[in-house]
Image (tube, rainbow, N blue to C red; front, side, top):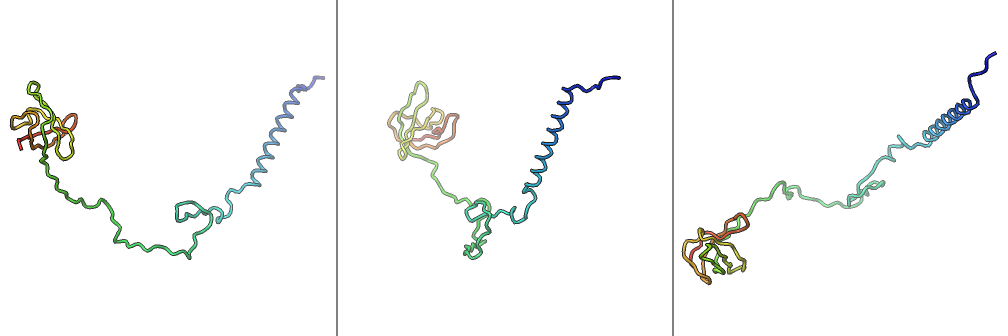
Length: 150
């Protein structure tokens, strides 16, 4: 007569596998029994209070609400108000190098310095002369152009 093909080790491994499977099924059944998923509709509702926070209590209808006039709400971009700014500024030649053909003008109102090139000058200047000028955007900032004696 032939011996059984199952050894002691095989039997033990099979027992462990079945025990593990039963434990897993038992845990699954427990989770399913204690699950709150798909509970009461009232438990799932959330409310937003006046400050934008989520709460589980409904808002109090006795609180007075502010009345807002819908016509006072501005939608879109407000109309631009035209402000006239004189483009001609007054200044004084702070530094000028005739050999290189550039210098700086200090504006009298704001005391800011602006670069000026000899091509942007209409009249001849020396340091300390008062002038009028306009500003244009250059490669490295604002440049004085159309510079005239004041």
